[in-house]
Structures are given as C-alpha cells and as structure tokens.
Image (cartoon, rainbow, N blue to C red; front, side, top):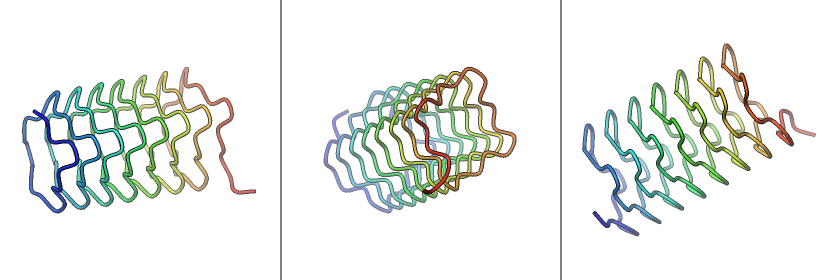
Length: 151
C-alpha cells in the first residue's frame, strides 16, 4: 500500500496490519499505532513526533531520517529495524527489542532505553547524551563514536 507523504497526524491506527506499507515522508505526528503490525514498512523521513507505538511490531522496517522525538516505543518489536540518522530524542523505548537494529548516527538524547535489548545493534555515531540505559542489554553492540554525554 502506498501512503507516502500522506497526512495521518493524530490518526487512530491501533492494531492495524500495515506490513510492507510505504509511509515515506508521511506526517504521523501524534498518531497511535499501539499494537500495530508494521514489519518491513518504509517510513523513511516520516514525521512521528509524540506518536504512540507501544507494543507495535516494526521488525525490519526502515525509519531512516524519521523524526520520532517524544514517541512511545515501549515494548515495541524493533528487531533489525533501520533508524539511521533518525531523531529519537526523548523517546520512550522501555523494554523495546532493538536486537540487531541499525541506529547509526541516530539522536537518542534523553531517550529512555531502560531494559531495552540492544544486543548486536549498530549505535556507531549515535547521540546517547542524557539517555537512560538502566539494565539495557548491549552485548555485541557497535558503540564506536557513540556520544554518551554533552561536552
């Protein structure tokens, strides 16, 4: 389904099945995707500030360059998801499964990554200033060039 550049801000799409959907450049600010199935979706450069993705499955989705500042991704399935250059500042990723996710160059400043599974994730060049990493699993994660504090 092609929904590129569509305006779905504030939409209620909880438990929707949107696998392989093209949402490139879509405005999804404040939308609720709680429990939605978005595996393999293309959400590059989508605007998703303050969106609710609690428990959503975004495995292998592409969110490169997306703006997810303030979004709720708690308990979300993000295995293999691409967040290259994405803005996740202030996002809630409590207990999210980011196993082998690509977060290269992502902005995770102030994000809550408590109890998140980041095993094997690529965090090279990511900004984790002020991020909460309590009990996060980082075994095998690539942390080269990762910023952990403000200068």
